[in-house]
Amino acid sequence: KVSVDSVMVDRDDEALLQQGAFKAVPWKKGALVVCSAFGIFVLAGGFYFAYLYQRGMAYVRDMQKEKVSALQLNGKKLEWYRINDVVMGGRSSSELSLEGDGSVLFTGTISIIGGGFASFTSQDQNLELPPSITGIRVKVITDGQLYKLTARSDDVLKMTEASWACDLPEESLEAGKEATFILPLSKFIASRRGQPVNAGKLNATMLRSFGINLSYLDMHGKANPHFGPGGDATSWPFKFRLLEIAAV
Image (cartoon, rainbow, N blue to C red; front, side, top):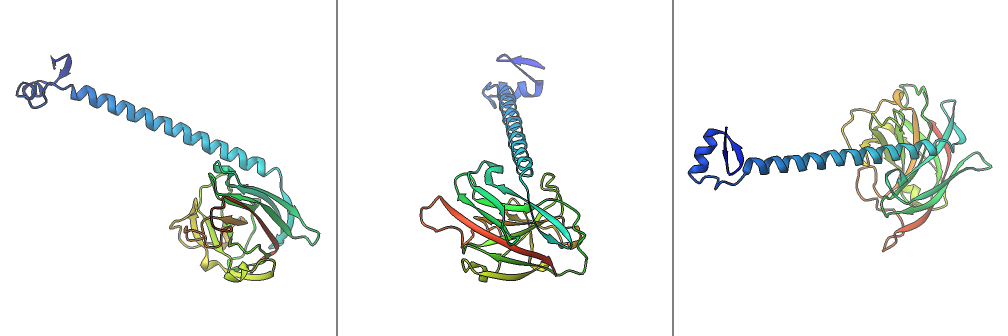
């Protein structure tokens, strides 16, 4: 190596510099600066993502301390807790309560600022669902918005597997009406962060929890056509009751 304009270069590069190919621009030194800056940027981004992830998981653990016991599935008692878009920095809020008839009442306010979803889910447990089941039956009363039934085969704190979701049928859009639906397992779509992914076939025997989700995205990852009042509204109330859930 030799020194050219205070920059150490290989002898082959020195010849090119003398021919004017690089105009004695310290290109190697500049490349090092760019690479170093990029590395710092990536490292900082990694730390920030880790911070957001840890904050989100702390929020979930706090929500798990506020469980509501209601209903059964396959003879297993279910304990429910809330997970709103606060997990990702959103502003939606909700309440979960046990009604006198044994149903679960889910109410709150959706905010599309920084988020756009509210949900509740059952505590992770071995539900021991038989391989013969073909669907999930739910009895609900909605507020006219489009909700999803969700399912997981792992603990939400681990998030190692994709979640599964199925929109409630169109009949659920009639506000205040009690209705019963059977959602075929074949209709459920695997997703991560609201977007469909290829996760193979849903194995009912592996499912460990179910939930209800109101989101700006439907089961296909597209804009929910029945989400809120429309217009320029950025927040609005919601109300949902789950009266029954069963495997069929």
